[in-house]
Amino acid sequence: MIKGKASWSAASDTATPASPCVRNCCLDEQDICLGCGRTLSEILAWHDADEIHKRQILDACRKRRRIRPTSYT
Image 1 (cartoon, rainbow, N blue to C red):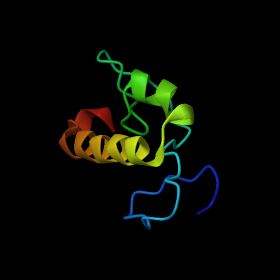
Image 2: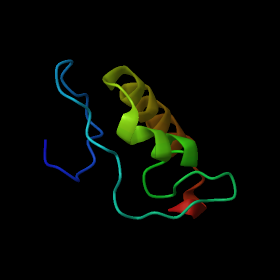
Image 3: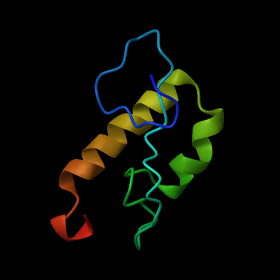
Image 4: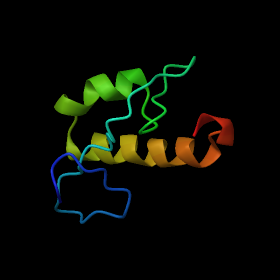
């Protein structure tokens, strides 16, 4: 994986998940990043999170991005 690039495809079970950050950081009124879909607490926890927690964060991001109103993009 390329460092700094978001990886929204299914990652290998042995690979450490890449950060979903797309360098478009702007939090909405619910403290969810409009760029990557992570909550502020998920962004802060990312660095210390283990692989399982990172995958849980990525799954939550995908779900949020799917249901995000189109006016956010």
